[in-house]
Amino acid sequence: GAVVSQHPSWVICKSGTSVKIECRSLDFQATTMFWYRQFPKQSLMLMATSNEGSKATYEQGVEKDKFLINHASLTLSTLTVTSAHPEDSSFYICSASDGLEGETQYFGPGTRLLVL
Amino acid sequence: EDQVTQSPEALRLQEGESSSLNCSYTVSGLRGLFWYRQDPGKGPEFLFTLYSAGEEKEKERLKATLTKKESFLHITAPKPEDSATYLCAVQAGASYGKLTFGQGTILTVHP
Figure 1: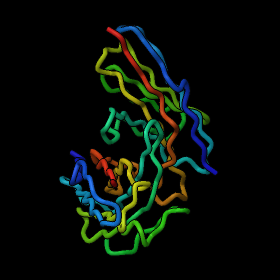
Figure 2 (figure 1 turned 60 degrees about the vertical axis):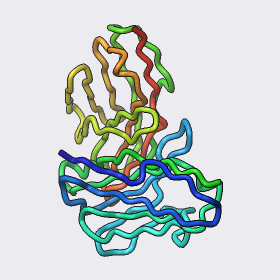
Figure 3 (figure 1 turned 45 degrees about the horizontal axis):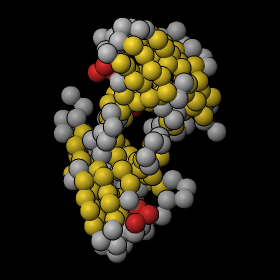
Figure 4 (figure 1 turned 90 degrees about the horizontal axis):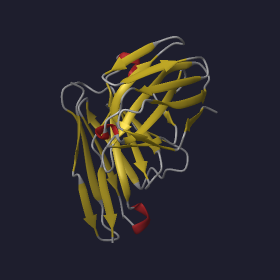
């Protein structure tokens, strides 16, 4: 149980284009989903928290107009990187919580983004 | 501000050589402490959640314990497939589910 998927697993795009990453909870309903960014050999950095049907809460320093988050249902959240630039290249990971078991977060496999 | 410090940064063990990883934390009202395993290029895999001092949980060769200031992840007779980065994270009572992660311990188990 508690499986989270992400799509795509990797993406290469040109500078200036937008990229959408999907995060799905496959066998449970996620009351809350989180989006993280991870740089090489570093720990996870929380970007934003999203609840189904409401606006995402962004961490300090994260541009909400650049990283658009939509949590349209209890099983799907999307992160859109708008007008991507090379500095946006990173490993993006989502997690989902069902609100049970101490709000344990279950993570997706991650999406590797490379902006040329 | 919630803080999590993991030590050592890296640990090399021979197969079968038991050891422990440390996670020290300061948090306002601990709601839960979490251990994850992360393999290169993958998302973290959930291992344990601990809620209160004195609590212990086991899974195969891993055992997690919790005190009021730190948590230990004990690895008994490790195998090469246990090699990974182990992440510790805390959740504060007023954090709305947010996790604060440590920097991780990179474990390498040699055959």
